[in-house]
Length: 265
Ligand SMILES: [Zn+2]
Image (cartoon, rainbow, N blue to C red; front, side):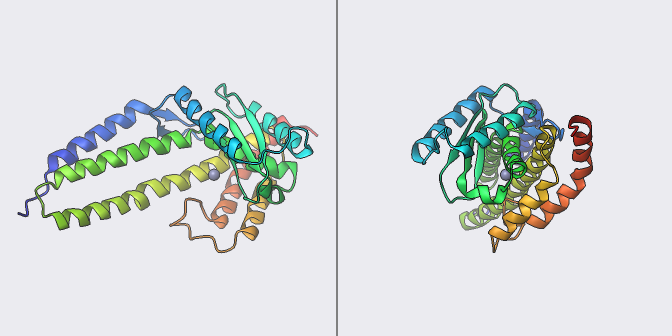
């Protein structure tokens, strides 16, 4: 049997998704973007803490006495103070690893891998890297992604119901297409938007803490020089290095104004 698509389940899902967004939308500090977040900060911080403890447990954590850890902590604390902190329990650690990486989990749990230190190069560069990671947590990008994935899954269920009287091979084909559409049309563009937002907010935090904003494009140039053969922008969750550097140019006047107002030297 090859029936038609039922429109009612799609319509109901569409209405529900719109209602859900407006009922749960929050505003990202600094950029003012409205986004969907449907868990509370306490739940989010608990998940962050659990992942953080697990990573620390599985990694080689640099001793608190090391010069690098002291630098990371002092840069981190300066950033946290100006980061629109909603009351996080901040924690900063250095993980001994070649990985060119750093992260900030919900609730303010920050780790910097030793592998990213040559890219950061200076305290100003470190502030750009850490500011970016802290911005992801302040903007609650992880929770937003979870909410989006939940809605995408519900949409797929609605599509399944809508197609229930169709031929099953045809159904499968459409489901695969919808899955790809959601991935490339919704989830990946949002990931890139999150990266740009974290770059922007991180630049503001670093500048408010009186680090040099003009170090930002240089950090990403060093990153580009280190990571050869990056996947193209459409496929990747990150904006290309070129886009990134161009965007910093756009935000630089705002940053220099913050610097002029807050940091006399
Ligand atoms: Zn990022």
